[in-house]
Length: 424
View 1 (cartoon, rainbow, N blue to C red):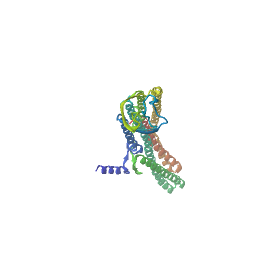
View 2 (tube, rainbow, N blue to C red; view 1 turned 120 degrees about the vertical axis):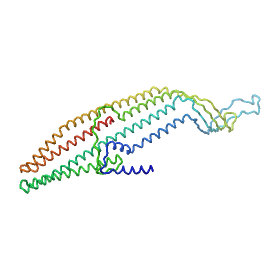
View 3 (cartoon, rainbow, N blue to C red; view 1 turned 180 degrees about the horizontal axis):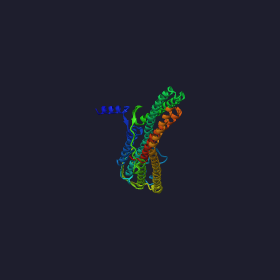
View 4 (cartoon, rainbow, N blue to C red; view 1 turned 180 degrees about the vertical axis):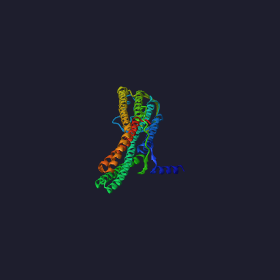
């Protein structure tokens, strides 16, 4: 039942009705869920668990098997002449030059200086670095979605204005046709308006194809089949008031530093001695009794202390390398914050510019409308050509379109500002 419900929801979501509205936040969510890289989170987590399990097994008894067969050019002999000592007929046994050995060894770590603990810490921090790096890659999708989403909204605004312009031109064509009948206008006036109407239709075709391309790309990003007539909800233009950088890159830098510090603990662990118990059982020729030149079983057990002192020679450089790595990450973080601050300032300047421009758009539109209406009156009186009228019509529509474009570009700047610092 649960599977059936999920399939129904999936089917309904894949075919968004033409009249339904899609929001920018929903596009963010679906683009992230649909992007193939999202599956990498599960793979990173599985790899982390496998590596942690393998590291933990270092505390378990370690079993090893070995076997060898050798032929020696010479063997140890006791240089005593027993006949000269009066031991006639007595022989000291000697080893054969071919020797064989098969051993099974068992060892149990008692203390490893913290090597396993350090390795497990490095595994966790490395997995965190990979996850944070994936966060950065997926976060970049938001900027691409912004461009597509606002591209569609701008295309919609231009299409609406193109249709308004065509309606306006058709209305004037009807008027000019009646003026021609009354002898006020001539055919050239009609043809001038007709040419502008055809050009407006041409522009509409171009805009429709551009919008269709934007919709197709957005469909691919969010994994939904969007109909051509889908409408997008216009986002709110609330400008962030507090500049608090929450970009995932900062979490990535922190994870990289933690990973380097975890590696530093591994250097310390490498300086410590290792203590372990061991037991070895074998079968070979000879065994532990060198005077028995035959195959026999043998065994030994004990405590082993090992200490790789040569790690002290490289300790200083290894730690300097880690310190240099940390400084490099910190330099990258400072550079990122500097560039982000510049980007925020650029977006703020863009927003301010459009806010100022929008103050004058309504007045410009009103004046352009007044000029167009005056031109219509002149046209009705036969004192204005159709070419001049179309110029004033275009000027009014361009002013209306400019306002819509300023609003959308200001919104794009607002969301670019939000993207720069990952603010809601």
